[in-house]
Length: 388
Image 1 (cartoon, rainbow, N blue to C red):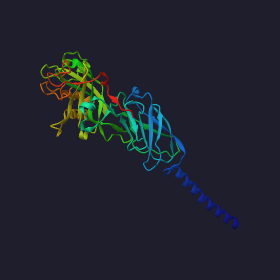
Image 2 (cartoon, rainbow, N blue to C red; image 1 turned 180 degrees about the vertical axis):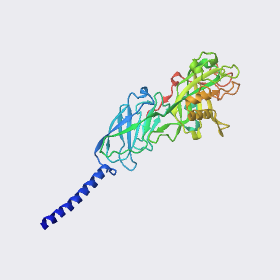
Image 3 (spheres, one colour; image 1 turned 30 degrees about the horizontal axis):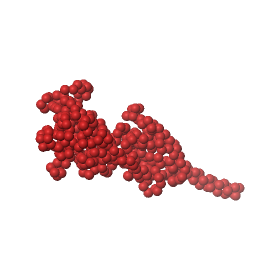
Image 4 (tube, one colour; image 1 turned 120 degrees about the horizontal axis):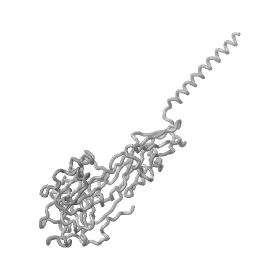
């Protein structure tokens, strides 16, 4: 009888140790430490929300999901092209990912580089050249690039690292926004725009790229070329839509103090600049009907390059800080409003550059006995893209 009791006690003690071991194992399964990295892949569902932007904003060609690995891991980032609403992506267990979604196919004037390094991965504007490079010269020796237009550039980076442990089907949510901003401008006090055949322009001092994974503008500024520019002879005499005119400043029709003379209106799209040190120059480029090229600069270097004319930068800063919808009401209807300088003898820069003036003579080859525009061929009208 004592032998049986001895065996029973030994069996009971063994069972207690075994039960404690099972309990500890169960607890570790319920609250696991980070799973060790492995080559095994697990599906993760990417959900892209468009509620705040509307169904019309969804890119027709979908979105790209980009999962960067930690900088110390020598592996290529994982990329997956998904429908606009998202889809499933296979990720390895136990690896820290930095997720980003962006509109890879949206804007034809953007390209991408450094796609395996989240710190330098960027969407950048394609380089381009035109008559601007030959006659105007870029401000601050900037590169000249294409406008990120016509499509928006939607993107969002996840606000932390993401890791799947393989024990459940994970879901990750994104709420993309357009990081390209459109700005409008009005230049009044011009003359002779009826002699123009084509207009376009350039804005200097704006980012040439955007870093989606870091959600900041690129490190270098550039001059962006744009084409959405229109001239109106005697703008005050024209009939304008009431909805548009309602935002214009009081007194714009005054023949002495209002928006007199001919008008040049336009809009351009850029990545939002850093507001700490804005230095911008707006250039209007023009071709006359008899194939002469003119340009006019607003803002930019002043007093022999020692100072910077803030006329463009100050208004651009207001639009960025307040948002264009609010700023246009505050500023009189446009993000940027500029007045041409007077048309006086001798104030024209040699070679067709009119400073801050837009005064086009009927015979473009002569300008009140002074220097005229540059004679060009119609084949020079369009800026030339540089193939990458």
